[in-house]
Length: 133
Image (cartoon, rainbow, N blue to C red; front, side, top):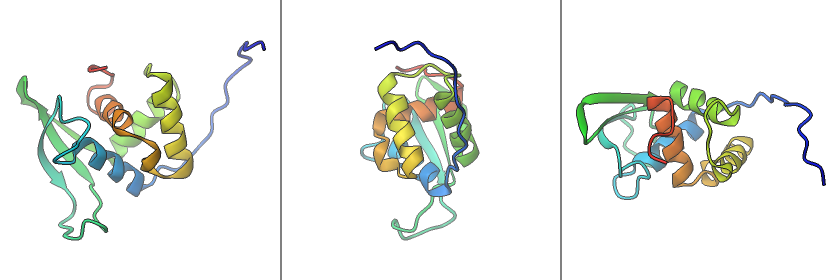
C-alpha cells in the first residue's frame, strides 16, 4: 500500500495537571525514575502534599552529575511544550516514543507512557532536545 504523505492534521488536546505530574513522577521516582541515570533530583514542589495518592508534582529541580552547577527546573508548562514539540515532529523521537505518547495524551493516562517516554519528555523540556538517546 502506498504511504505517500498528503499532508498533516494538527489536533488540539488538553494536557492535564495530573498527566504532567505523573510524567514527572515517572522520570524522577526515587527508586525507579527513568531519568535518574543522567539527572540528580534536587527538589520537588508538591505543594506540601502528604498523601501520595493525592499528590501532584508541580515542578522538579535537578542537575546533571557531570555539570553540578547547571540546574534545570521542569514544570507543567515545560512538559506541555515538550509534548507538543515531540508530537509535532519539531524534535525527532523514536516512533515508539511518539506512539506511546499519543496514547497517553489521547487517554489522559501516563500509564501509556513508559519510562523511556517520560525520560525523553524531560530531556526535551529541560534541554530542548534528546541528548541521551
